[in-house]
Image (cartoon, rainbow, N blue to C red; front, side, top):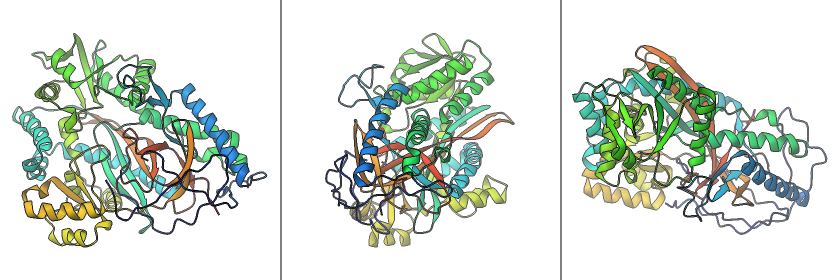
Length: 544
């Protein structure tokens, strides 16, 4: 996808040459949705470079000049690549056809930022505090089947994928199927808007919230690098918050398994047939086994359909093993259901007594349309009683509108760079920007019935910063923006809330000229955060 207001052209930056780039300006275009393509590099303009010390951090000792700092970054990049290999911060290599199916084959280090992104401590605190409120909101909304069906009634008429999900939900409602034990592993994604100086939510993910494993490792990598190079760069490793996402997600899965109360049962991880991000998933598997003694099995939807059955008492059995918890790392996109076999598998699991993460209701709460409905006046009050919590959520909402709003649609056609058009899809590469947005809206107005398949969202303009990135063993610098994801875990057994926690974070950084931001899709890199007392977000190297 392209945006008319993003047009950076990059040439190679040689790792051993110092350089300074022109001031990127106040408002380089960015997107309200996240995904860096293949590295595009800027031509360096010779000048001095400096590492800016954070408040409370001692100035850099003998701060290196331009050439010296480039040499330091090159050395750091090599050490980072080694650290990734030794510590399992790896993904499958797209160049190796077996890397997504055979563990241990075709590994490369995950794409990373070499240094953490500065992030204001006040906004970090705000994002963390929102996690438990959003967790509770998801649970409350999931119980209101009438609201879900009504809010998505028009969407299902034009979006077959949403219609199939709602069909399963309707079948469960007709059976009066109750989910007494409910587990949610969520991630709420945010950007800092430089126009309003506020933290605004991009989306709430309720299914297959990825990178708790690898995201946790990046924080450790950056802490390790700053322990060695921090004095030279004027940076303090203690300002990188600890990230326990992997262990806390594993704890939530382990405690859900305990609630199921069957010592011989397993956790079923539903995965895609080809998964180059399998090592992120294996970190959770390892933590589950080592800390809780819980065995996990991995199956595709097609394998579940072929090997699974639901016994008369509701027990889900896959390949002869009782399943306590179904943890979806697939099933969130139409491409995960290439045949009716996959839909039969989804229905089979939903009909069972196994704990679903997420249940079909939790899944539907995470749709773009429900996000837009919840942003309407007085809708949050339907689900939450605490006025302070409601106010906190509302402050994080960006502008969200249905395409029934003719005035907003007109504004978006006239000023497309101020909006993002979002379909009912998860994963990167789906959103529409700029001239494409205008053309799509004009086309949709003629078709009318297709309007319900999309929502409009206010475009967010985060501040850009020049960032050293590492991909495929090479490091380069580019103008970037970052998106913060806050993980949350929620576990409930009937009226008892067992867990409702903030569970670490995911920082993703992408080249500012890219509209999309999935790491697995190849658009972004993994990052961590560096807490500051500032009110803007940049990276830890600044160029004067």
